[in-house]
Image (cartoon, rainbow, N blue to C red):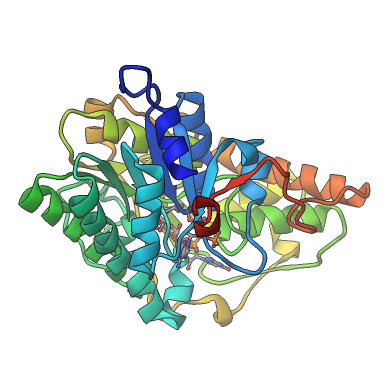
Length: 367
Ligand code: NAP
Ligand code: F7E
């Protein structure tokens, strides 16, 4: 099957008709938006998902692209499954978005996080180096690598010091550095995007923005009574995820690989997000929000503010959706979902029902 896939991308002269991209973590927020973008650009899109008892394809379904991509089971802790994915997809571009991405969970599972979010980057780079060294590689690095600066006004750029404060950020720093090392040592085309927080209605419910927008919608509709949060003073530079995946693609279209900060250039506190979200629903946040130290982290980054000047100058990328609009998009979408749920509609994530046209490529299919 995978050989047929590779052949379909060749014309009669043996030249490529379509570029192929392999996205790890296609079931996550960024993976789903990036898959849609690359499909729109005419790519053959392969995505990796985890083999679990109930796979998680709701984001692909909600973007209407579930049957449009080829899905390959990959466990990032397992080198052989990564090699198999590269063999199947034979990619021109790899976007390594798969990771244990929740900072709080990294304090509970530091070793698994180090493996999946850190060491797995070397598994990929080494696979590419040995199997397909002309592949362009994107690594999902993060603003968390900067850690706290103690200076709320400091907009961080590619040149600033990296000082991680969580097992997640430490794992990502390893992935960031090893990407640069493979670029310099083996002349691989490997770029890292140092992305600041980016959110959307497809954000996981454990992250603070979606936790807030979902709670506001449920409170408004009488389905929830209160919202329990941790550190309301933390500040983040929040942007809109569909715009951030454009920057990933732009990075791999440059002549030479490099690292880029991608950010909105504005920082707001969790409290500001809360106030705005409740305001959009016509509610006073003070009647519903409580704090609990359960949601405080052993170490938290107090403020992250990014300076995307290099991405603007070299990639021609700029953020378009401002903070107020982002909050509105998220609250309105969660309100719409819960209204539909109250009207009796059930979603794919309530009762998975995957369309039969989905092309799930397994070892068995390849035989
Ligand atoms: P996400 O929604 O948490 O998605 C993570 C993806 O990784 C999911 O598809 C997940 O699969 C997959 N994954 C996790 N563990 C895996 C494993 N052991 N083997 C195979 N796949 C595994 O994250 P996101 O927000 O889209 O972020 C994408 C990437 O950018 C991540 O690497 C993240 O660390 C990084 N990043 C994110 C932000 C942000 O603000 N969103 C900012 C900077 C960097 P399941 O669906 O099965 O869980
Ligand atoms: O927390 C505070 C929390 O979990 C943001 C990931 O995508 O972006 C994300 O990491 C802030 C923190 O995102 C709650 O303490 C308060 O200060 O939404 P978050 P994050 O940790 O910034 C970076 C760039 C990534 O790379 C990561 O993969 O909000 N906060 N109360 C809370 N956070 C959560 N989750 N839940 C609360 O109740």
